[in-house]
Length: 356
Image (tube, rainbow, N blue to C red; front, side, top):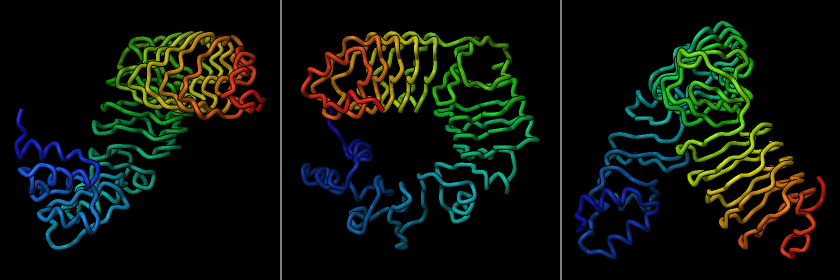
């Protein structure tokens, strides 16, 4: 397949650096003038690179610190970094387009409890302690709800989430003692709050205490002993499965790129875990207190093992340390079942066996 001008222009939109654009035009003569065809900047620009895109009419601002040009040739600005709703309205009056808008507690005090349709996330404690709030509808564009967003909304009885959430913040519904009904299109979440849903069974430890109905159906509550991580998930948050005392095994699939601190802390029934992911470190206290853990495969991509990572894993008698691991943190193998064996490994420093 031979790439034409349009195809190479579309491809070059995904370049990360001005050097890539320059190398393209130097290396392939027939693609000279590629940058001149752009009517918007596909990357942040500085004084030098601005001259290489002479025909820009729409200026994209990717980061708050980006250099902004007002040289008379720019007719419109597109802002990609997160702005609050008040800033969005100001920029809209100036003719700018904002792509990521958060509704903050400050915004709510001014504009009220109905979430504007342009908003893409709800900020920290946005509706916290709104004691008179009875129901809330989360509109389609919302992708993230920040920590403690509805904390202590004691009268809140119904939440309808129309959007496909990517992240539900920690303690998002903490203290919502009156919440009995939730409507959620996608019933699978992983977060510190740990709302694990797989219709019609709700599996969680920190769900709102009185929650009884999801999507109009009465739910059952049970302890978590197994959980299939959805393929759409790329990160497990800090303390995500902490104290899931009945969890016996789990498979961490390839899409997972990051595991948070204390992710499986004190999962006392966890026997085996399969890490298929390409993560580069096992974080602090990840398996601390997993007293039944007897089997784990550490991927060859791992280069760092965090503080107290396998502390008190009494049943773990065999563990293979990949050759790429060069960073061992304090107490990572303290009181581990394979402590004596690992002490013979000259690569592992003595601090790894110290008690915190």
